[in-house]
Image (cartoon, rainbow, N blue to C red; front, top):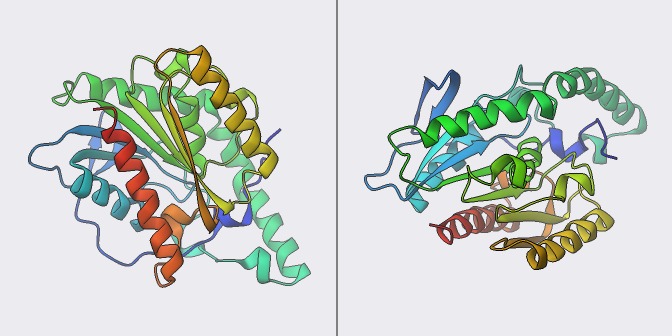
Amino acid sequence: MPSTLPCSACTSGTLHTATPQGSSTNLFGFETYVSPIPENPKGVILYITDIFGWELPNARLLADAYAKEGDFVVYVPNFMPWVPIKESELKEDILENGGLLQSFSHRMWLMSRFIPFAIAARPSVTTPKILKFARSIKSSEYSSLPLFTVGFCWGGKYTVLLSKSNLGKDVFAATAAMHPSMLKLPADIEGLSVPLAIGLGTKDQAVTKQGAATIESILQNTTQEVKNFEFELKWYESMKHGFAVRGNLEKEDVRNGIDDAKKQVIEWFHKFM
């Protein structure tokens, strides 16, 4: 069973200070950040955020990188009823480096913020929103382009779910989940048919070694049972949960991990064009 409370790395990290180059609009009924659209786009990426939401500069900057370096149209919609953790509340390593009282107080604060959110943004509510947006893309001016989805942490759970035959089979060409959180194993990883890439840090707190072994075993079996199903599970040495979006760019190893994770997603999606 998954925890209803995010791990410490789910709610911490560093704020990236560059300026996103895209624009915000209302698209298909959702507030949406749209990265600068390349002259000759090769595909469309639906980006599902972590619990810091669609306005976090880190998410928008990464979306811009996918657009520029991968020639994608990239949409970052707001699928949340509200943002449980705001960017001003990024507190890196508070649970790891704080004292007992500080850690306990922070955990209680997280519970008060996140449990109501987890109920309001449960899969039965959120998944139909995502599919509505995705199907609208399939009927848009970019209907001829392959559609992909990438998710991070909270969003990573949904991109895994959208790899299921009964949800994403006729919608997405491929999906990617970077350090997904709150996975319900084995149920969330069963019944897949859409090609799925997963990136995990070796110090990820949200997916245990046992959980990762379960994921890999099920995915291996799925490749034998489901025609055209492919997966990629990549490990990032010494990276913590959340590194691909909220990692500290001032640390060379983390910066390299962020860049490699970005390349993993771009190269994975290019494979299915």
